[in-house]
Structure formats: C-alpha cells, structure tokens
Length: 276
Image (cartoon, rainbow, N blue to C red; front, top):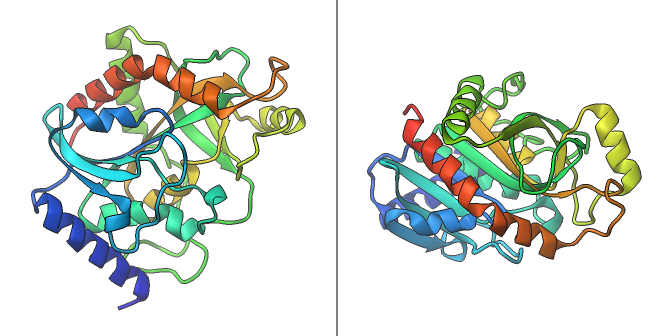
C-alpha cells in the first residue's frame, strides 16, 4: 500500500478513535473569519490539528487550527476551523490532505468557504458569492505525481467541479432567507501578497469575479475523488486598484465578522436542506 494511503488511513483511524464511527454526512472547510460556525455544533468533539497524524498545522491569524465534529441542523458534520495554504510553505499535497482524510472516512460531500477580494465591480464588501467555477493559472497542482487509482482517475473531469445540484440548493435557500447571493468565478492566486491592480485587471478580462489564496486546491482534490462540492466566498474587500486604497488582513477579518450572521444563517439552512 502506497505511503499516501497509509497516511490517510492512519489519520482517519485516529480521528475516528476520538469522534466515534457514526457516519459523517458533510465536510466543511471554514475560511478566514468564518470558523465560528464550528463553535455552534452540538455534541461536538474538537481535535487540534497538531494531534492528528500527518496533519499540517495552520499558521494564519484567525484560524483556530482544529477539526470539530458534531451535529448541525440534524446532520453530522466535520468542520475544519482553519485550512492550510500553499503560501504557508506547504506543498499542494499537504494542503489537500485533510480532504483526502475526509474521503477516507466516508465523507463524499464538501462545503468550502473563503474570504475573497471582489473583482466584479457590481459586488460590494460583505456580499456572499456562490462559486460556480474557478480559474487556476499557477502550474502547481495537488494531483501532481503518482496517481492513486483507489482515489480517482489519472485524468479526471472538472466540468462540474462545483456541483450544479448543490448550487441550485444554495440559490433556493438564499432566496427563502431573503439573502442576496452573488454568483461567479473564483480565481486562485498563490499569495501571500495581495494581487496588483494589473493582475486584477487581467483577472477580470479572464472572467474572474473574485480572487483568493485558497479553496481551489481542495476543490481539485475533491473532484479527483468524485466528491460533491459547494463553494461560497465572503467578499471581504474590493480587489486591488478598484477603490484605490491599500489592502490588509485586518479589513478581511473585520468584514468577515460583520457578515458572520448572514453567512451562518445561509450555511445552517443549506445544511438543513442538504440531501444526504
């Protein structure tokens, strides 16, 4: 058995030993400023990343760096309170390892969230955006290297990386809540520097509506394993050059906190309606 599969199984066995073997319906990756939802789970068990075999450790301010399993709106879910980023120095394979562990534990549905910069000039800070597609132009990819046939095919389809049925569900739920849910394409940049105004102009020409430094690697790995993915971005700021003001992480966190109630309401309602 190859090393990756061994590591996945070892991590999955440890997590199961802590949370029990009851099936988990949905995996969730909670991005910058959005991790508070995991604190609302019922019958929750929290595990620090540093305690899980082979897991990296989150280094970003605002990311608690732990896995939380519990009940949300009647569904048993696993939440990542903080994720791993390429810019932290981790390889793409390390960035997506938790998603592969989720799959090893029988989780086949994934919610990914992030804080993003708005490229579409009709957006405003505090908007929530349904991710309908993504753009990744940097060469590095989490599926580079040996392919593990037990996980997925060497060459796999990304036409519906963000599941159309789950996107329809998110639209329906947001409408019932009276929330405006923007939609668009998320473009992945490596970071940690924010994009330049010229890069944002290029991103707009290419069809991006928002930019960020996460989510796409996880979505690629999930697609490789045929997991159904729903992605939601919190537009925390307008991207470089649009408002002619400097960007900073404090603004990202502040806007995330301001929109936390709407985001939490949307995720809770989507989870309640999520078919499992």
